[in-house]
Image 1 (cartoon, one colour):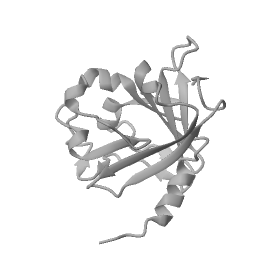
Image 2: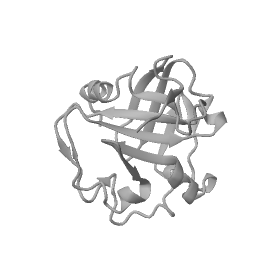
Image 3: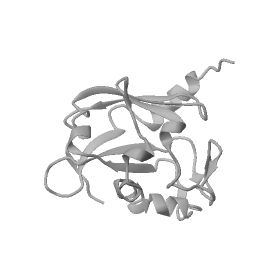
Image 4: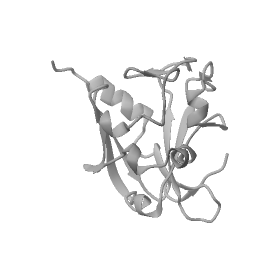
Amino acid sequence: MSYDLSALKVLIKKIFPPKKSVYTIDTTGDNKADSIMIKALNVIMPIEVPDEIEIGGFTTKDFDLNTFDLSEYGKIFLDDQRITVSKDDFEIDKLKERFIIYHNSEKFTIDDIIEGKLGGRLIALGDTVDVIIKLDKYALEKFTEGEHKFRLESELIPVLEFIFELNKDNMNQNFVI
């Protein structure tokens, strides 16, 4: 069965504006980018985060990060190059340190999200949610100046794709809360 996802593509472009959604940032203060930041802009309506989040059959109530393997559920591509994210490639504790979400200057870790600490939070119209992912030097080298395409393919959800552009205004920025 085929679906017309043109409206979803327009919405994704509004939530992730190409020149204002992805940044390379310095989180340590040494003037060297060490992370990417993905900004999602709420353009829909005020949204209250549920106490229990469910995506593709997984819920935060019964989710076990130690047994979850993203590579079994989908494929991630950056500029049509596959990025393999297998649980065998990462130590769970290091992964937890590398993935942080900020909303209204408040920090949430993966554990916080699984424990429901984001539940009940209101994401107002116009609010942004910042996802920060610490990367190693070699992974960051892929985030060069110019246009890029990120794509997530999964049987659980429709293909998600968004185009972003990196330039002097969103590269190597100091991250300040």
